[in-house]
Image 1 (tube, rainbow, N blue to C red):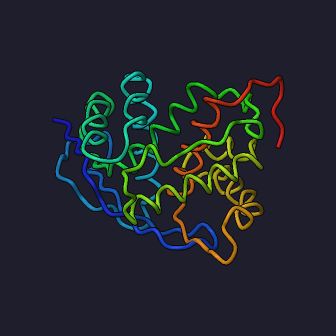
Image 2: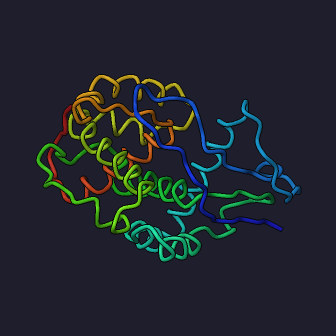
Image 3: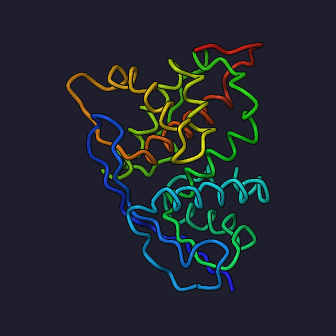
Length: 232
C-alpha cells in the first residue's frame, strides 16, 4: 500500500555566496516501485535520486490535479496551505513506497510543474515588462524569520528571472541533477550578486534556488505581456 505524508520540516536558510549542495533531507521509503513502505533515510550519495522522485511526483500531481495545484500555490503559508497541498498529494502519483515532503518542497515542485504546463514551450512572456509583484501576500504577516527567508529567495529569483529569462526557464525545465541544471545555475550566478542588497550575501541550496526561481517565473509570467520571442 502506498504511503505519502506532507509535513513541515525546517529548512536552513542563511546567506548566499554560490549555490551550495546542502539539503534539508527528504525521505523516501524503499524507493519508487518497491513493496517496502517503511520510510528510510536516503544516504547522501542518493540525494539526486530523491530530488528526481520529488520532481516527477510534482509533475504527476499537477497534471492530474491542476486546479487543486493552482489553488494550493495561492494559499499563504500556514495550516490552509498544508491542507491544500494534501488534496494535491494523492497516492495515485506513487507506486508502492513512501515519499515524505515538507510543504515548502512540495509547493516548489508544484510551481515548477504548473510553469511547465502553462509556459513550458518556451519563455514567451516579456518578464522585463511585468508589473512588480508583492510577494508578501503569500507569506504570513507579521513575517516570521523563516517566512522572510523564503520570500527573500523568491525576490532573488524574480530579479534573476527578469535579467536572465531564458536561463531561468532552462533551470525550471531541467531535471534535478542534470547537466542542464548545472549549466543554468552557472549562468545565473553572473546576475545573482547584483540582485542582493548592498553588503548582503546568501547561502542557498539548489532546491531553494530552483524553488525561488520557479515561483517568481510562474507569478511574473501570469502577469507579463505575451511577446513573439522573449530574449535574455
